[in-house]
Length: 366
Ligand SMILES: [Mn+2]
Image (cartoon, rainbow, N blue to C red; front, side, top):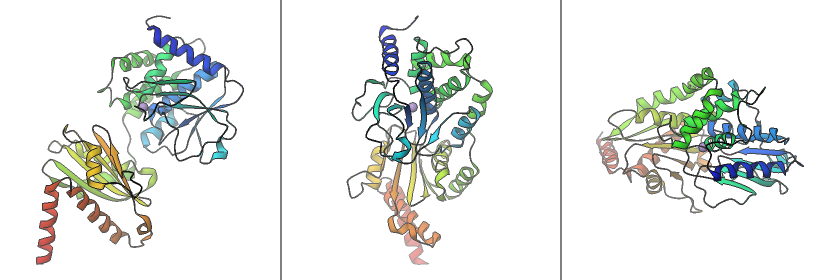
């Protein structure tokens, strides 16, 4: 073992020990949310380590793959994943591993006998999970970085004789790439991991998925957002109407695109997805705190849970429409939603309020 500091070698050895002592029951790697490249790459890496230790592990997810680039990644690399939606689907498994998350996906109830065995994540957890193996570090940009480090430290190293590690290396590399905003936020560890993985990657696949294909519906939504865009100084807001659940990412995709306009530094795009209003905020201005923006504009539900949240440069919100979602008149419903969202956002963007009031006055005069 070369180059590694003591603690990372020790972590790899500890993971090996924990996994190889749990061979009596099948393992499941349960992905949270809509699986992203980092989660997929980490899951493949985890599964590969299990395989080497004679442990059978299945990658499962509850929510569908939602971005077309992620669907392309899974298809091109032939990633073995099963979709689960109820407790019984997990009944056959004895051990649970979480990658890229410290809490299990909340939309599924876990069987009582499923034991949490390992947690590897790079997000700041609300509380540190309790499991035989926990490696949560927020000083790296991706969970795939941590798994690459285990491999480099000798736990199932890539490129062994007769092994084809192209799929796992390519997914992990793309995971680091996407989680660090194309390496803009990479730490030295992320670069080191990427350098370790790169020789095993399929450059053709990386280049294809890196083009970030956009679904037709998402591109239509971008078109609507551009047409409907209201610009108030350096803030912009646009509603895109109804978006199908599978293309929910049309909303953040449109927001990302509009933020590239040079005279705008904060943008909010929203639409109706299933029975809720769904929105994405993007900002490049340091003084805008997306979480605070969401809180001030949309507040909390009757149980005190905020409708939206965010991190440094992005945020999102979801407001259930309740019985309104049954409204058959799509046009009236959309008008209502627009009015609601604009009025709420005007609490945070006073100039929008002025604009809305001016519009209302000129309508009265008509
Ligand atoms: Mn991640």
